[in-house]
Length: 397
Ligand SMILES: Cc1ncc(COP(=O)(O)O)c(C=O)c1O
Image 1 (cartoon, rainbow, N blue to C red):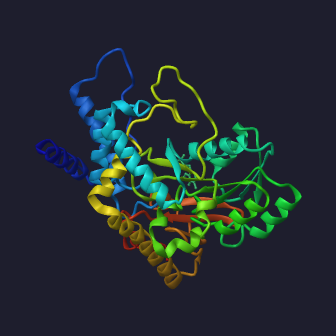
Image 2 (tube, rainbow, N blue to C red):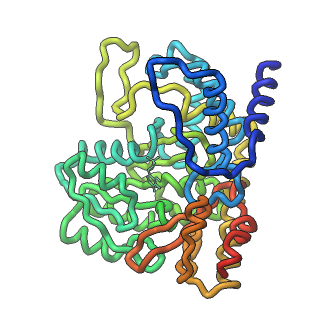
Image 3 (spheres, rainbow, N blue to C red):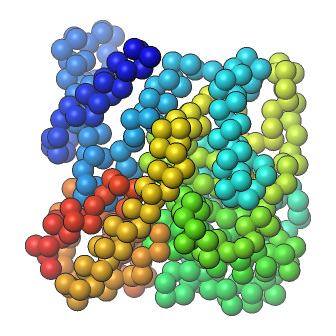
């Protein structure tokens, strides 16, 4: 216990080390034949800690990157010290139990009985389409124009043809256009988004499931960003009542749940049809893309759940939505900017003012869109505050 207390104190100390927002790029030393001086080593660590400190800012809303909680950080450190490989779970019964407990809880949340970690949802999307390809001889994949670029990469890698379906005015996949496309060319798979990267939009998931069923296509949900909102009962309509009928779903706790990377999972309705053998392992590995793994995806999340409870994590997610809506309301009220409806904690708006300085400070990001450039603020848990972002935007109102 003393060790854990000391570790906690050390972590608190590191996170309080510097409030400097000095983002000037400084030169790092080259790799040479010789060890560096201790002083140089210390200043390099301090430089890195200062850079990471930016995530602590309440106006850090440019991307899906939040500070991580003490419990999650402790999980990450303990995981590095443990350094087990769960390809041999019989050697690490405690870690294996924690992984099992975490995956089971998530499986229940997403109504998908089979699941495992991935190294990020780019891998999750690739693996899901890889599985889909095993089940069909078709080649066409339908996804909206707002789908993440990892779907494009996956289709290229798997030699599948991605056809983009247009979106409606709030950036959701146009279900009528999908229906027409399916009539003309029945697909291998339909990919629906639960929270797009740019606008945070939810596609009509239930309708996508119905169409996929009608055309015997695989239905994959990319819930990398928006999946965390499954905790909130008020978001149930966004996921629809057919989640248990989707074929696969990926989710990244390292986005909206503020976990360290990689904390990412892929779930299936049915066990994977891919079987591989490895003659040096006691248990045959599952047919998944990932090889060696420790507790990196599970342990920080499990410790977060132990220390905050599901209730605490739920409140953390709800807070992001409240703060995001508060910023959207303020912009509607105080400016004549075009504000997009906030769907999953991302606030997007268009204005004629140049906000480049705020992009450089990590306060917002820029989305290139067919209607022109759009600014975007991402709210995660309690790490971003509407008030802090408004303070930065106010001079431009
Ligand atoms: C909707 C969506 N899907 C997939 C990904 C890819 O996730 P990762 O960066 O963890 O590979 C992202 C990344 O931002 C995303 O927003």
